[in-house]
Image (cartoon, rainbow, N blue to C red):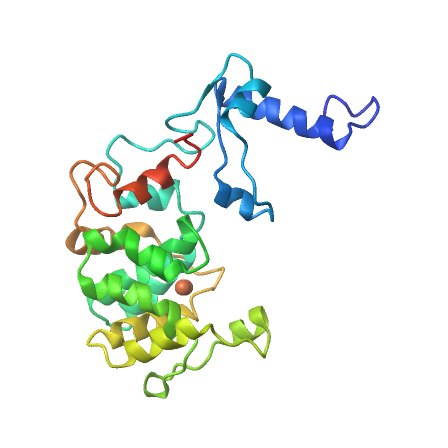
Length: 258
Ligand SMILES: [Fe+2]
Ligand SMILES: [Fe+2]
């Protein structure tokens, strides 16, 4: 029950104003902005203009750094920091990596499994294999980033040679008539004969079973493998001037005005 419980119930716009006010307070008087992409996810093609937002918040400046509502990141963030402070869920990734480890696969395959859904866990669901691969590409062997990219397509196609069938879960999620987009079919065809095909396929094999809510896995178990196969920049992810540094920075500061 809030302070208004005894009085007249608040209208929706009053509730919105109160929420906005509370969030502003948490923001230390700075204005956090939502990118168009965040609004698109609410079904709206729109964005607040700078002048309009500032008019609504007189005397306040826009947030141009860390958002205090989000967990604090260190000055030189490493992959583990993103796992802990930015990825909304890591259980699925840890379970996948654990399955690959137990099955005796190479450390590159294990790391590929550990990273295969970082796109979903921390960035954007749609085309998550491509986003995830782009994020990690400067820091891992090409085998790993290629496999993460292509698992996006491969998971829709069976491979009897490793006992991988079309996931039941996709029938449940997308309906029995769902057909992957033509670009996914093309990606699959290209991947079929690629030298790293099996790495991407093993992501799928260790993926579909990795949703056990009771499985106990620990990120600490993979710290050594990350250390050996993920080239952590000494400046921190985001400050190392690679083709994906800006993506790590966006993850770190998603509500910066510019
Ligand atoms: Fe995935
Ligand atoms: Fe997955």
